[in-house]
Length: 206
Image (cartoon, rainbow, N blue to C red; front, top):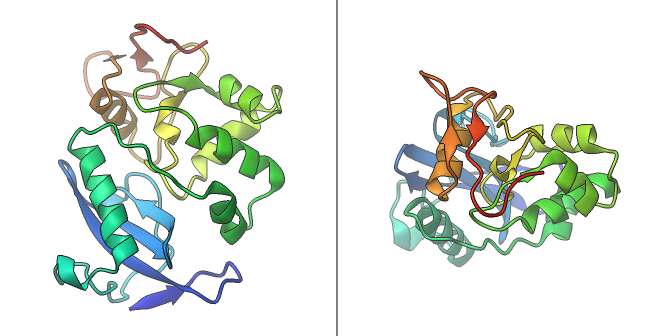
């Protein structure tokens, strides 16, 4: 089953699942383009195909029924969650055009896509990289609306004081993903909160 995107494209979303150590996530593709991603339990990201719709061919129907682009992206995501330092090669300009993002948002997502595995940067750093050094609050808003987490790694963007900040509906996921990439996170007793702080080693946030 598929769903219209509302982006103006004649293509339709195909939704497939991918495995993580914390449950299955979902990825929606627009042809060969990753369009939206939802982490397990809806912790971050979203799929706009809608609840109650049948999944795309291949989601639970076996690897052979997936399209070639879907197989490739599922394999990359599962490699990432297995611990490989995957470099996701996303056509950011096409992705942003399909979503109807502004020029500023496109610049922010280009800068975000360039943040390497295992590195954390601040919202201010990302604003500078996007060419708008004073727009760090707007950068935070763009991160909050990111429809493609992991591929566009908003979990690598933290506050200037090293605290994590918010991440979807479950702040434990941000700490989990940073630790997964080898970045230490120091938290008080209990579950990591937005106030949890990076333990800076090597390249640090500013």
